[in-house]
Length: 222
Image (tube, rainbow, N blue to C red):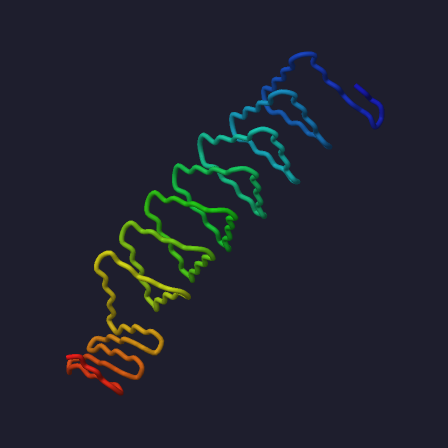
């Protein structure tokens, strides 16, 4: 013991092992800093609940692996502030049950390298607002079964260069109103009752009344 004013100190030393047994409650109060050094392993066993409260910042440094196992009950983590996580190596997540993610604000995901996703069962995507997809490189889509595209409003497809449609089987293109095929000022219009071909000021029309041909010069090879 040291009883010098301003340097009061009590030292407890065990040359080898030390055991302490408390048959009821134990309370330790430290009015200033506390430092505990364990040169080898440290084991803590709590047979009931454990509560830890940190008023300030909590910093932990693990120089080797870190493993946490929850054998019963759920696991809940609540963070009221911003969360940042940095992993300098690979990350593997395995979920043996259902997984749900709920984001009440905007969700932004950036992948600087390639991305690969495999879904072994069905997949459904529901977007209640607008949906925009932008690809700056090539885009390829392969479907081994039927492919259906349904739009409740207008459907537009365009290409700044060539565009081709090919089917190894029979092809069908139908409309309940009218079909228009155009190249420049030349058009082919098909509606429910007629077919009209227009090119260079000349018009050929086929309807229930017959075939009419209108042009500055008509040549028939009969």
